[in-house]
Length: 164
Image 1 (cartoon, helix red, strand yellow):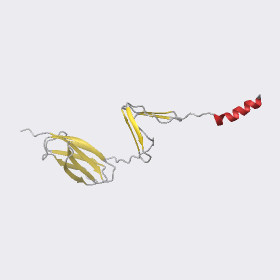
Image 2: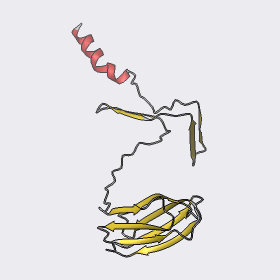
Image 3: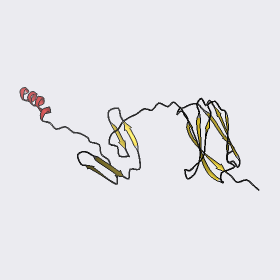
Image 4: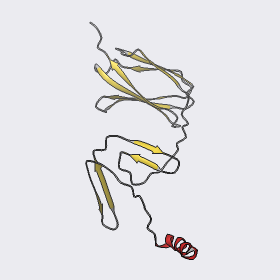
């Protein structure tokens, strides 16, 4: 009897069935196409995302994901102090800078994305005056990027009409 029990316990793992879990997406619509060289997968209706990790298993819900890859990004943003005033403005926009160790490209866009004005602020320059008296009344975006990539910022500026 012991021999049969030992024999069955030793051979059972070779004939048993294992369980596997494949990634699944639950969405209101979706499809997967594969022609041997190219794959196309899409889903519709995933309105929530969340990830659960218990140390052994990871469950990520929302947004169709074919492969989960974790990437770390090291931030090397500069500690540039920036002050734009007055906002709203009617004539001039003063820009005060501190700790800018690289040249900065300044661009003024209208809300349609059209470039209105472009200039360069030199490294270590502490003040810049943006002339707003030649643009129409409305909302604008001031985008500032340093050439070393450590600064990339966009600010909304309102141009008001001059009272008569």
